[in-house]
Structure formats: structure tokens, C-alpha cells
Image (cartoon, rainbow, N blue to C red; front, top):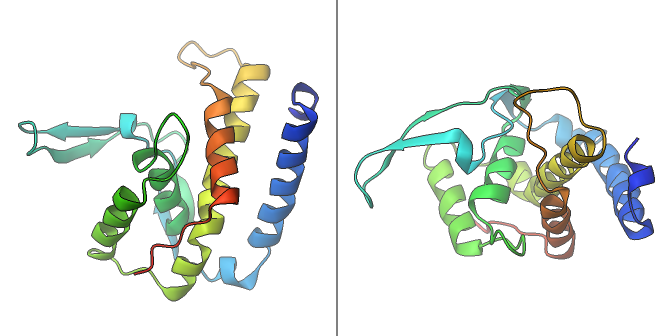
Length: 170
């Protein structure tokens, strides 16, 4: 439904990425990923911190509208695509991303399959938010609290994830 609003280059990216993600979703490797409750929208602006500057501690999360059951790796990918990037370009800040993944691994070690599929899930997370932002921008719903965000941001992020796949190398 959003394809009519896209340029030829964007339509190509959309259809190619959809085919890639469908193949991934149908794969035994994806089906075997550990799953459970996920936030699925854990952007920086959905987290709260307490404490003095330089000594802040995470104190809570909110906006559970998209929460559900999915692969835990998808939740990690959503976080990496927001918390660990250069916002202007969409490029992954590898130092922050590695620190994030290492801190996560201190709580739950990533399996070899999760490490291998992380580049694909980074693409999936970028694709999901590009598509949802395109929808909200071009096909807005009546929602008093919905603010359409720039879909171009996650188009840049997706293009970066396709062009430069990242493995944490743990």
C-alpha cells in the first residue's frame, strides 16, 4: 500500500528487502532463535534514567504498544539501530554497538546462530521501522497522540545495514 508513494529506487529496496526478510523468516535458523517477551520499540526516548550526570542508572521503560513475543535478537537489533548509530547518517557506531552487545552478553550469552543472524535482524528492525514510518506518513490514522516520524531516517539505516553488515565478533 505504500509502494505508490515511493520512488523507483525506494520501491526496489522495499521489494528486495521484503523478499530477503521473507526468506529469513522461513528459514530453520530463524525459527531456532531464542524467543520470548520483547518490547520491540525500545528506542532511547522509551527509556528512563535516574541519577547524576555520568552516574545515571536505567530506571524504567514505557511505550509497550508493540510489545509481544518475538526473537530476543530482534529486540537487540531495534536497540542497536537506535542507541548505537550516528543519527545523521544511520551508520552503526561499532564501538557503542560492541559495548552494548558485550553488556547484554553479561546477562545472556548470544548463541552462535544469534551472532550469525544479527546482520539480518538489524536489517529486519530497520525495515520494520522504515515501513511503519512510511505508513504513518503517507496513510495517517486518526490518532490524537500519533506523530509521524521521518521515514527517510530508517531508509538510511536500512541502506547502511545492507551495505555494511555488522557482526559483533565476540
